[in-house]
Structures are given as C-alpha cells and as structure tokens.
Amino acid sequence: MESKSEIISHDLIENRIFVIRGRKMMLDFHPAELYGIEVKFLKRAVRRNVDRFPHDFMFELTNEEYDVLRSQFGTSSWVGRRYPPYAFTEQGVAMLSSVLRSQRAVQVNIQIIRTFVKLREIISTHKELAFKLKQLETKVERHDEEIQAIFEAIHQLMAPPEKPKRPIGF
Image (tube, rainbow, N blue to C red; front, top):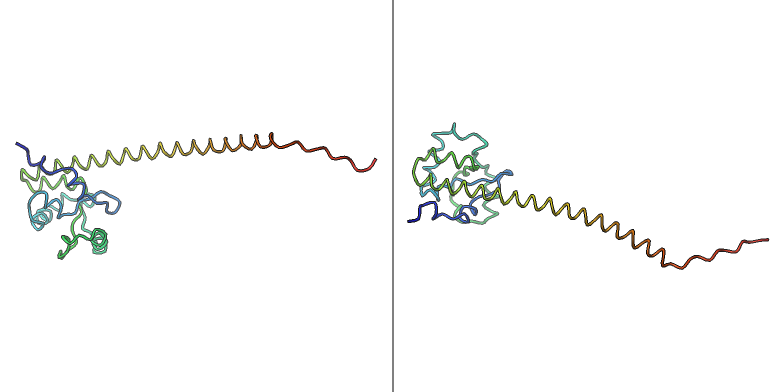
C-alpha cells in the first residue's frame, strides 16, 4: 500500500514553492493544505511555538508583498484572506512537523524537504551549466578575435602591392 508521502508528488509541492525576498518559501496555506488541516490551526500551532521559528525560518508577508504575489498569479483561492500569510523556508517547514506532531505532517514534511533538496540540486546544476557556458563564450570570443586577425592578415596578403612612387625631382 502507498504511504501518504508517496501520494503527494514533487510537482505538486514544487508548484507551491515561491521565491520571496530572494529565498525559496512556502506560504502557510500550502503546507496546511498538504497536511490536511485548516490554516488557522497551523497558524495557532506556530504562534504557540513562536520561539521555534526565528526570522530565517518564517516571517509574515507584508501587505504589499502579498498583493504582488496575488496579482502575479491571479489565483482566486487566495482571495478572502484577512491577514497576509506566513512564509516558511525549508527549515521552517521542517520545524512544522515538530509543532504539528501528526503522522501525516511528518510524512508530508519528508516529501517537502526532498522537494526543496531536489530544487537546490537543479539550481546547482544550472549554476554549473551557466559557468561552463560563460567559459565557452569567453573561449569563442577569444577565437573570434584570433580568426579576425587571421582574416586581416589574409586581406593584407591578397591586396596588390603598392607601386613605389617616383621621386619628384632629379
């Protein structure tokens, strides 16, 4: 029989990870949905254990950030919320499993952490590819300059030699 963590795909989780303030984050209603609980219960558990969630694990979005996200994605399911959501980093999501203490929360967190790690590996691979591409571009530019110099030398060799001018006078 499939475990609950296998039911939740990486793609489903990846679609719920956003870059906010330059970091990969999940908004509070997405983990709540994955855990199968209401957002208010998740927020209540977090507020009761706020010392477990330092600013680098979780923060509340500003109204402006929330408006930008809502307008960017045009998601109607985000409408009707009175307060901006909490945003959780990978570490914050990991801490949620210790706060929620349900078997489903533990299993879902395992999948979420695996997805964060997968994304990190993908980004690392892209950085390596970008670096190699930059090296290749530099190499090609250098070769272009060398080829241009060769063409200039060939053009000079192909040009007919200038006839010496006769001196004026005796």
